Length: 232
Image 1 (tube, helix red, strand yellow):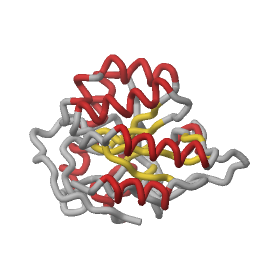
Image 2 (tube, rainbow, N blue to C red):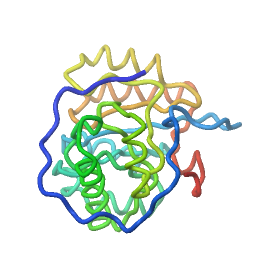
Image 3 (cartoon, one colour):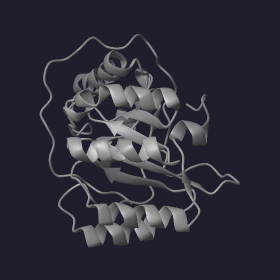
Image 4 (tube, one colour):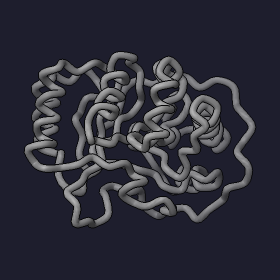
């Protein structure tokens, strides 16, 4: 299930590309987790435009047993503002980061060079601020992807495009009652669900989402925990 987001920032100057990391491109993105005897799902959080929202998700990762995967849009200032806590949680294995570009351009309509620059700049940001290599995971902006994009990303080591099988529908100004309804609908075993750190959810909404997870006996795992360290 795909959700398109309406707004994005403009990219700026290009950067030097990664050293050659060319690898075979996947023919399809990843939409759900591999089979497992564990009752698990992947709670993935995109963008990070809101400092308070990002802090709230980092708190969940730090104080509960739920491990979260964040897809970083690195031009958003909360990723710099919270760098110390993010690094600590990475070191503890409680979160994982993926590449969601520098400025959230539509990569399907961008030139080859812009596609590589957008992914490269986000990659460089994560290396510089957290000493963290997010490869091979990236999330195509707006859920838009095609063969060319997948091949370009793979050419610099981002070989695993990650989509989702369930959404909270919260990239825009979705009423919280609808967000809760969608969480109830989509948080299921084996699913990759998409959430956003763009607006602060109320304590009530977060309590209801956590209740769904706990009542169903689920554990959120990072993509690396689910797919293994050598997945490409």
